[in-house]
Image 1 (cartoon, rainbow, N blue to C red):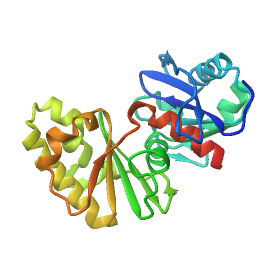
Image 2 (image 1 turned 90 degrees about the horizontal axis):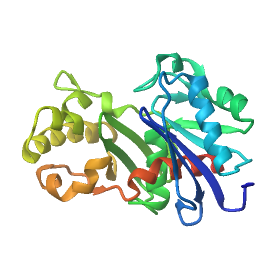
Image 3 (image 1 turned 135 degrees about the vertical axis):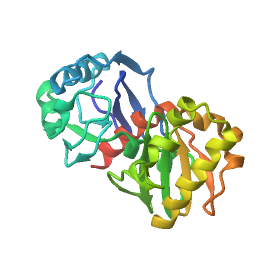
Image 4 (image 1 turned 180 degrees about the horizontal axis):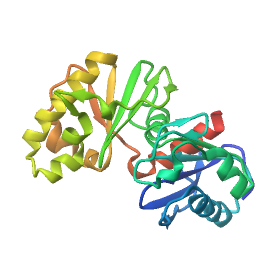
Length: 249
């Protein structure tokens, strides 16, 4: 599949799976059924890049593409490594993937990609203010967008709140691990979001992650001055956002 007008390709690298698909960049949705391949173990840069190449070949994709990664990504270099092999720390991911696939890759943080997609096509579409997209899962991911422009590599999940790394207390994994009620978890989220909004004063919170599908069950227990809505693109947000950011690079 050679690159066509208004068509991009995104790949979402995670600790357990690597997913990719062509994306309709006008409508903000997948243009074909996504392909998922288990993340190789160990998940070294070379092994992961090989799987990325398999996905590109599956879709016969010849052009540039976007690729998410669960890490801080500065100018294509992965500075951290969450749920993947530690050999990614300090690796030039864009060069490694380009060398392995023969195609130009734009590598971005996974939460940043999801945030960009939600602002362009999802729950915050058309919003002109400061939008904070927060994903509640194993950890807490974050993306900050102002007037449609992404401010990359925010790590708001690691704010210190009451002496704790926020995600160790307020992530969905903490709720499950401690068997918290929705009300008790809501109290922790209230505290977390309160600290965050006092730092950045956003106009809107968009909350993603699997628990966003249960928004009505826990949101009544979260008190913020900032409006809060659930994400809309869910599991496709990373792929869509990666393709979008590659197109705008």
